[in-house]
Length: 317
Image 1 (cartoon, rainbow, N blue to C red):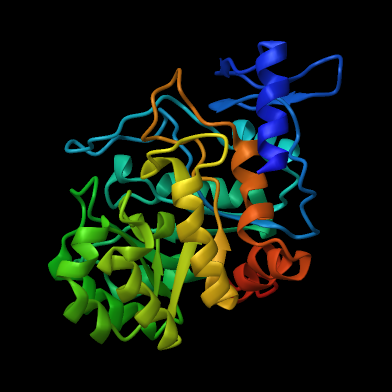
Image 2: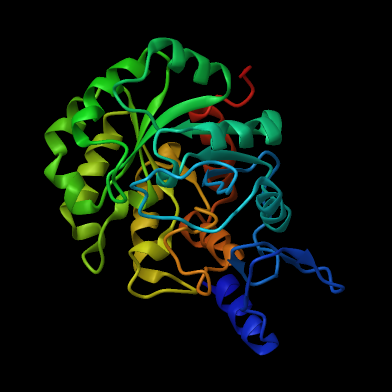
């Protein structure tokens, strides 16, 4: 990837790869954002209404679930807005992280602060009432997440009954499973009534990549017309690493080639699975799209049109 490699070389020469916990704009016009390496803007220009479809907010004002496995430092709405300025994105989807269990207060607070350019994905269990689902719908929630990697708040047994309930609202179920888990649950996944969104390239493991059965299964689900994939968090399963993430990039390219109409992009900021002193460079991650989707029209579909459909941008609530 010539864009990413060029930036990487430049940043090394400048010694600018330090992680920042507080964002700022330097005298040279470069922008740093909390919990993101680097300071340069992406080489790829974001189109109008470009959407980051996967990010989280963390704030000590909100109680952490007792069984939370990930407990990152604060990463606030103001912090995230600095990342938006750096990347040029203007819409976003706030995903309730596993840290807060089924308490979606932090996500609703973020949506309220960000306004009409934000939507949300909540975490609920089977005890949730229809009235609460309707309330969440009115506040900008468009789906529910099942994190079965950093598990705790939800279980696989909840997936099918909740899929049936949220389908009536036009929501989707967002699933974070490892590739092997996806294969194990293929019968269940194929009978879910609602739309499905797989997190993070469906966590297809490396080095198997597109030859792993999880990739074939996700492709099969996509072909049925109700499944989407988030082109996000390439670093989680890559064995190659930055700047190219070449192994994960092959998976992303294959998804885009097969079904560009079912792809959305996400930053996964503030990268809660990564150590505080080893956060990825979000500009490099954004520029990967130039390699994954070389045609501008396809990138615009991934960044603008697909999110508008999936997350109901342009509609009230």
